[in-house]
Image (cartoon, rainbow, N blue to C red):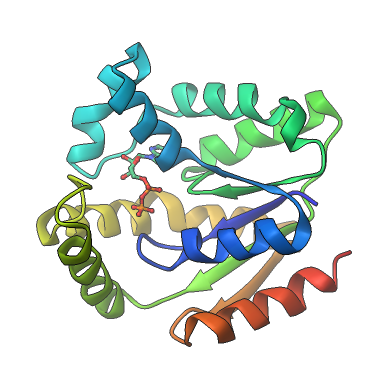
Length: 191
Ligand code: ADP
C-alpha cells in the first residue's frame, strides 16, 4: 500500500505515520527528516537546504523529487510507503506521478489530517518547548511563514488528488488514538 499523509505542519503526521508503519508493514518517507539528516551530515543537499528550511520556505522541487525518486526504488519500499511532507507543491505532485508511472507503482490513498491554524500554533509552541529548540524552524515566527507557505503552495495539492477521488479526511483535533482509529477505518477499506 502506497499512501500520502497530508496536512499542515504540526497536524500529527509523524505520530500517525509511526502507527501506520507498524500496522500495514510499510515504511515512512519523511522529506523533512531526510533533509534534516542531510543538513546534519553536511552533504551538498544539506548545504543547499539549510537556510531555506530555517526560514520556513520550501526546498526546490527538483531536489525533492530527486530524493524521493531515489528512495522509493529501494528494497525496503517494496511492500509500500507513507509519504510524509511530500508532495508539497503541485509540481511535486506531478513529479510524483511521473516517478510512480516509471516504476509501475500506484497511489492507494491520500489521508488528510485536518487541523485549523489556531490549534497548530499552540501545538508547535509546545513541541518547541519540549524539544528545547532541536528544530530551528519550530518557533512562532517561522511557523507563521510555514503556515502561509502551506496555504499558498501546499493546500492546492489536495485539489489535485480530490479530482482523482483519492482523498479521505480525518479530524486532527481529536485525541491521537481517535485520529488513529479513523485512519485505520480509511486504510482497512483500501486493502
Ligand atoms: P513540518 O513540521 O513543517 O511539516 P517538515 O519536517 O515536513 O516540517 O519539513 C521541514 C522543512 O523542510 C520545511 O519547512 C521545508 O523547508 C523542508 N521540506 C520538507 N519537505 C519538503 C518538500 N516536500 N518540499 C520542499 N521543502 C520541503
